[in-house]
Length: 420
Length: 108
Image (cartoon, rainbow over all chains, first blue to last red; front, side):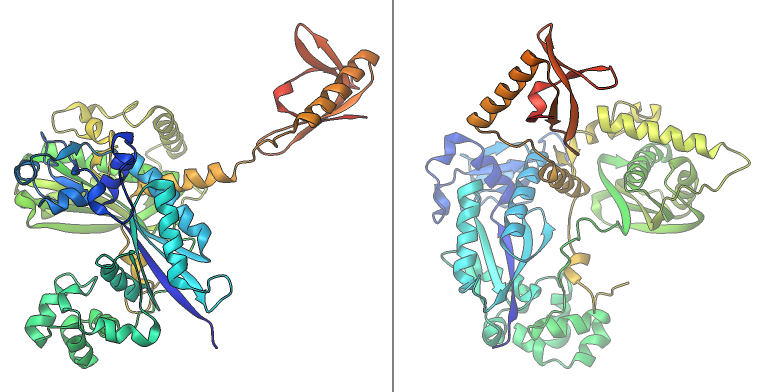
């Protein structure tokens, strides 16, 4: 019998909320792995005073009471007055996540992270080491519960996409593990509604409206040429997925490969209308992006600016290629400002992003300039980076960041826009 | 360069915060770090015996000291002075020894 790979997808249940519950002995004793409602009704919410006053994660008990992620805090308290709210502690979640991922990595031959609370693994089958894939997945699930008091669900299938789909089923299955063997994948997949196809976003509506597809089985029957004509290259991907095929391989070193690009985004506490205000945050973001590039020993030739307008609708993204790769803000800033002046229509700005890509190694060879002392500027940034890594981002900062528009002081206490 | 059609689509759609990557990297470094060996009671007793004999008889010893990157081996005549352990080396120099880092004592 030929050996095949079984791919697993793990999804941590209500991850941020579960970490909070697990780290407080008040609630820990009465919790049980298979009984969701032994958790207290808890939600991790952003700062109520700021735009982030929304529910980031809610425990199963809170969800059962009607609390949902992205719900406004006031609304959540209305549907669940007993709701316990805590402020996010992002660094704690990342620390727990990395350790759980490490547990998965050490259990199986192949592993790949997907997000803070999801990852993939793969095991050969049949094999003496893993005689029963479902039993092995259950053991892992119990180990994660024993060590971290986090519930997870596991989908097993012949490839990543099907594993992700099987995981959706696992949410509704007692024991939290679902295996779709190769010969049963289509039987499981095809009756599911097209809206359940993972990764399609708005394309699911296109499939419903343009092709009249209700189930994934309907999608599988649409000729690939027709799908391609409407959805472009995605048409082919959709066709494969609907037929249970996914060619995504594993990249175990994915966390270590050099970056393809750096990009930082900031949602502002209010709409910015003044050019001088936007320029302050633009420079702060550029500083962050450049510092990340310098730390990775990389420099980029293309710098980009993205704006999201008031109400988080509309905006633009534009990028420009410069002659020499750089990771120094003073070289990239004029290009960014030129892009801003050219494409911004003056609408209120609610979110800004800055990107740097077309990266290459930041070699020791230096493009000298007649107008500035480049080696000295390099040493200057080395010193700034060293101060930042030792004493924090706000130990040295631009005077412009002290203006009312500046966000760096607040931002330095956050990870991914939430309290660290 | 991989495309959506042929590549690892999940790599392209992945959402990982830069801080996550940094945390994972730090964790990996911590795990890979060398740790000093845990010595048994009788190993410690033997080290102490060999060392005190050498101090008494002013005989040279070879000391192995733990270091996170590579263990350090030094030779010389041990001496206790001012509550500290010193080693007189062959070149006439005297070096202080951090006894907390000691992992082996041999008669040289």
